[in-house]
Image 1 (cartoon, rainbow, N blue to C red):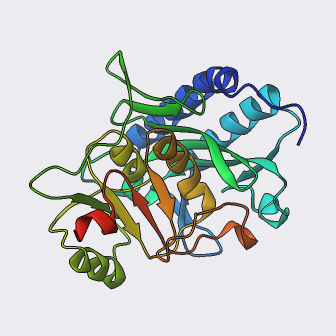
Image 2 (spheres, rainbow, N blue to C red):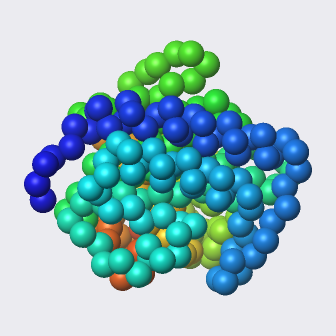
Image 3 (cartoon, helix red, strand yellow):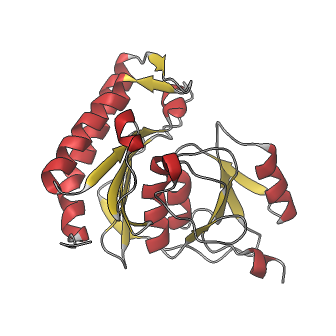
Length: 264
């Protein structure tokens, strides 16, 4: 890799487009959403495509030499992962976007991958007014209600660890993992917000055994890692990016929780 980008400057240049994408998503949400089905059966809306168009234009302007792999551009999924590339999910949590419960657990996501690891991440939940992003390799921030705070994972509270789990895709393997590790309390929420709750010190661990794609996880993963967390395979190996078809296997994202310390 050459011409190392200034990550802090890159985030600064991308944030206006992320906010614009969020505003477009919320306008479409307010007008009523019609979902179509992609070839894999997953839902897609006009908000997905409108947000992606905004983000891809911003990325092409801010970092024209970096490959972009994006959810709604199926052609990009056939590109072999280079040493440095962007992963974009313009609307993660489409099922939550379509759900009439008002939870607002859907996000706009941009991640930069370098040598198989997420080094920059932006996650914006427009319905909740919460923006999470890395600044550099040492600092991650949340901006909400006009206030900015540094993010850091928390020690597990004395009353026990709190897990986060998928609202739409929770499975028996997740329940078995939680039971095996003595975790009784779970927050059920959609999208990449699960990583961000760990980074913000609002939960402690996120096991995931049902399918995800790399653009679903990379931005939140980057934020969590900079906030002091980690993401591993269930076997304890580092969780990497640029896999075949950009398809993830099972993983566990850790805040302050560790199976080793939990058993002692």
